[in-house]
Image (cartoon, rainbow, N blue to C red; front, top):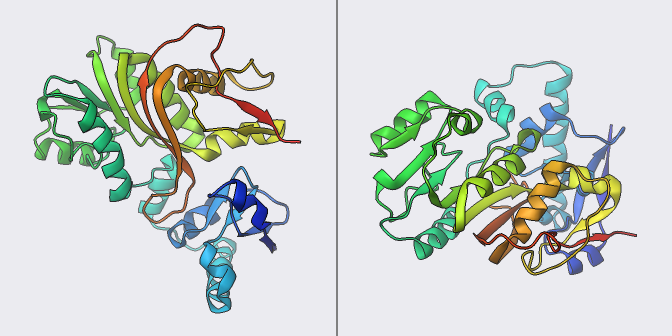
Length: 303
């Protein structure tokens, strides 16, 4: 059982990415199988708003609304009748991996190209088949790609990449003796907040004043901040000073600290993924460790 939810237009005035229409189940919680079946129709769970978000176009088109209601009913029927779900979809759900649209690939790669030289050393810790690095002008011998999937790793080698590591990022880190990375580019998996883990570890191994272009999920942040009624402010994250806040995890605290420990940091909302409207943040920044007495991005209380 579910209900249609209409959001106030005032939310959109304050946040360009706030929803206009969504659905809530009773009881209201995320259903992994449902998420899997409807993601290609741009129906996605928002931890921030505690509902599934539907495309804005539906609100002015009754036929479109009816179409999406049929999609929702079909997905629920599939789950109820325990019909078979494709292996490919299940594999994607396993890691919550989203393939980056070309517009976002261009956005991230332009930043890396504009701040690098032929001597730069680049890392992509979740390389896939190389979509983020294929447009880089850095020599392939200077690009390190970590990819646990054997088939994807083989494709990377066929493309001419010289440093393809067929393992998980965690296993790669454990080996130690890593190159001195001047640049990192990544669209990491979102499952179990791995995107925050990847960002923190990449920030750690990135050389001082090195550059990072990354994507992290909004849900990874708001599943923790929502119960505490904190709002995550992405404006000028490297320049805002704030005190520590009680109740947030070490993982999120480190992520926020790292955002603050940058200069020329640009952080924007994005939903530029193939077959999903998953909300995320794109981050372009230069690492710059600062004093520990001013180490947090602004978090404000939502009263």
